[in-house]
Length: 178
Image 1 (tube, rainbow, N blue to C red):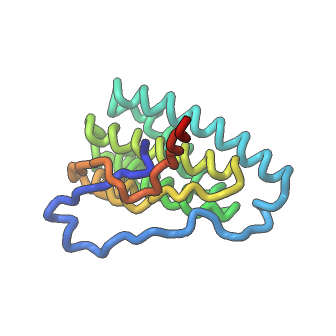
Image 2: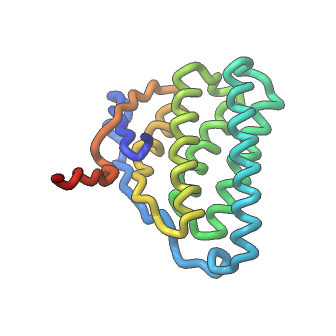
């Protein structure tokens, strides 16, 4: 469950401004148009599939320029589309992922296992956020922890990610007595 990702920051990050939470959605004319939403969801499904495949490829060959460019383009496109539709949570996470892969494509960061792990955590958060878009209601997912983790990874720092109870817990119904 990625709703409760907590990042324990390194000493270098403690001095930085705290990252707060934002609304997942904002009111938007594009998001209220059923045909536009259908196109958005179709395109995001394709982009997420591209991200899944290319991140797995990157894991095998972390310096492959074509793979890196493909990931960067998918992240950039998804960020832009989410922003256009007012899906702030998706836009925020994708912005940090795009920044990370910009560092990779510039050669200032070579992805390692920690980087890939954080990217996969980001993809998991994105899936939750996209599911919320499909359901038409915010999920309550906290984006600040993964934003911090992706920012740290983009700087070459090693983020430590732990599960936390900072996100809404799934409801559990007790069995009624017989």
